[in-house]
Length: 118
Image 1 (spheres, rainbow, N blue to C red):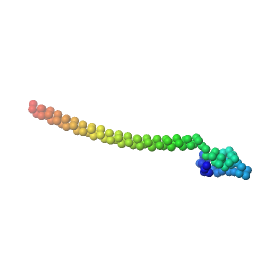
Image 2 (image 1 turned 90 degrees about the vertical axis):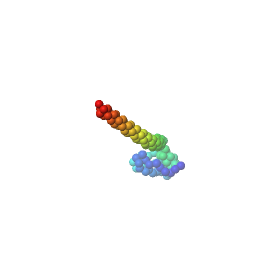
Image 3 (image 1 turned 180 degrees about the vertical axis):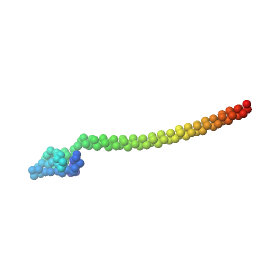
Image 4 (image 1 turned 45 degrees about the vertical axis):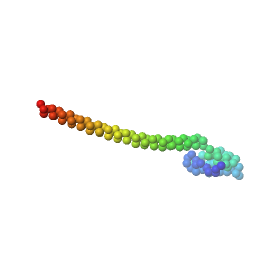
């Protein structure tokens, strides 16, 4: 097993202490948090580093970050598609407006010619 100790929940680094001529071991922090005494140095380290809730939360955070990144990519793609669709729709409306203006001009011309004939 690893000799590396996880930092304390307060953020400080911790150290391992032996008692009674290296018979008992504890991991302690300056803030006062410590684990119970263990008969082996490795058991004290393993107990200190065993944080199933924290480990589970870290996994959940990692998964949420992954999902967030996936959604950001999806949103960017949808924005691009939406922008393209909107541009196409605007272009269609502009062409339709030009066609309608041409029809209006022809009808106005036709009306003015009919008025002249009278």
